[in-house]
Length: 260
Ligand code: NAD
Image (cartoon, helix red, strand yellow):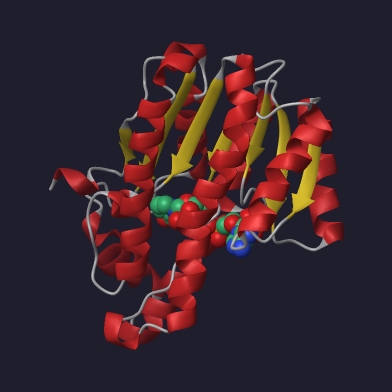
């Protein structure tokens, strides 16, 4: 389905990003991986993905909290593969704390990665998409892109902003064969959430299985985690030609969370 296309997936050495990279590679796209792994770990992952899918896979380490690094990642993708046709802005972090106790430097870091990197990679990738008259941008926002939770104000702010940014970009490029959408998962069991489970277990003095059901998944009516593979399959659809009219949209994959 995506043979001949090139995909850059940020934060693709773990969790949702890795599942998305795998799905796009299986569909035939050349993939640029990115994340914060050691060089040896990243090479093992790159080689495994290339061998299991038969497509070209590259890896570039980049700290996307820095604008110059985010732009350099896009340039490295174009240098390696000749274009960026699909951009999945996935890298993100979470930090749970009350606003009046939230560390200033963590706010700066979170906004730099969750929001500003999306601007920098999009800005750098659009000329390549415009030149080819085809592009897909999928921004992995969150259910926190449309609703809020206490103690997650910076994360909620960053994801609401990503939703707004996605809509505005979609309008700008609507006539150029380029779509831009925000994909908003509920809770997906990844290292990012494992950390929250462990933290909440300490805070509530509960075993982890009760924390998962009574605290973490209390907001998610299915009481089941969304699987990273489900988010990957949705992303793959948004990258397909069948989804060419799906743009500027906010797609929810949240087990009914935001229906409440
Ligand atoms: P994860 O922690 O498993 O993976 C995060 C990825 O981002 C890793 O590859 C990591 O190396 C990379 N990364 C972290 N900091 C980076 C930096 N400064 N520069 C470059 N890469 C960096 O997390 P995940 O749960 O897979 O989350 C992926 C995205 O999905 C995030 O944007 C997150 O906000 C969003 N999301 C997650 C959930 C969930 O429940 N897990 C729900 C909704 C949205």
